[in-house]
Every structure is written in C-alpha cells, then in structure tokens.
Length: 135
Image (tube, rainbow, N blue to C red; front, side, top):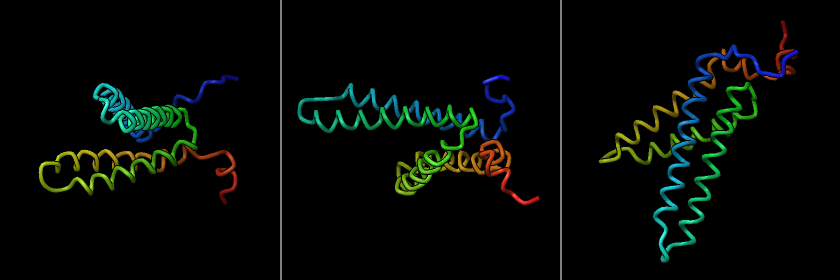
C-alpha cells in the first residue's frame, strides 16, 4: 500500500490549483515589496500589511498544494478567496484599472470553474460523501 496520493488528477483541478499557487506567490512578492518600502512614518501599518500578505500567500500556497493532493478542506478557503477577488475586480472596473479588473476576474472565474467541475468535485469528494449517494 502506497501513502502517495493518486496521480490521476483532473486537469481542471490542476489548473485551478496552479492559478491559486500563482496568487499565493504574488502575495508573497507583495509582502516582500511592502517590507522593502517601510519607513519610520508608517512602520506599524507596513509591518502588519506585510505580515497579512505573508500569511495569506502562504495559506494559498498550502491550499493549492492540498488541492493537488486531493484534500477537500482546501476548497473552501480557495472559493472564498476567489469571491473576494471578484469583488476586488468589480471595484477596479473602469478607468485605468480596467485591465487589472479583467485579469483578476478571469483568474477567479477560471479557478471557480476548475473547482466546481464535476471531475474536480469527484476527485475532492470525501469517501463518506461518495458512499452516501443513492444508486
């Protein structure tokens, strides 16, 4: 018996997890950039913002890794993150930030579609859920 997870992962789930990993890496980059721009006038705000981006980015990376490994618990934080992303995209619409809004919205929709694809739902289903379905 092998302890390694199955390598038969649906493509929509892999795409969704990959995009979530990119989001996590970008948040880690933002944390580093925020730390690099600290000054004495706003040390508390800069430090807490950096810590937030660091924790959020690390959390998303953990969720992406867990999704690829087939752990269903990671779906909820990822869905919440994408819903927040859709709200951010809506607030960025219009003017000079339209391209950013479109990019955020497209990534969020692709991740949500990948997570809610039937093959992904089956791959992330708990054994108890599969057994309780009627024939």
